[in-house]
Amino acid sequence: MIHDPQGKIKSQHLRRNAYLYVRQSSLRQVMENTESTDRQYALRQRAIQLGWAQEQIVVIDNDLGQSGATAADRLGFQNLVAEVGMAHAGIVMGLEVSRLARNSADWHRLLEMCALADTLILDEDGLYDPAYFNDRLLLGLKGTMS
Image 1: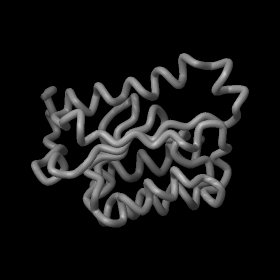
Image 2: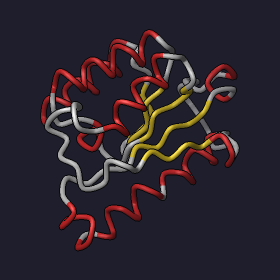
Image 3: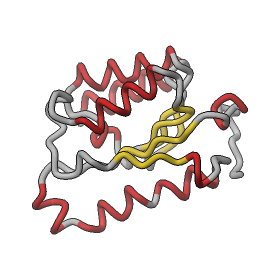
């Protein structure tokens, strides 16, 4: 397990699954920008370093090639939101916040659900607990800017 100086990862998080959401906006991006896809899948290793077992990592990648403009047509995102809402997720991972949702309303709903369900969020910049005001503020800004 890697060092967690802020103590955000608790045993209750590690008892639940780690969800990795992988998405690119178009099939062309999927075909031409394979490095982005590889970097997204590489976040599995971060979950292992943080203490999750390999078998606890659930990869949701059925939205590859789907725009993030709305959650309506993204079954993977809908599944992710459902898993968070049922408190099955200890952490949600995405390379960038913008991979999760381009629509601000969808993003803020997910943030709210993560805060209520005690689910952490990880991107390539850091580990966040949406129940903490400063983390939620930063995540909100990142989502708004995407």
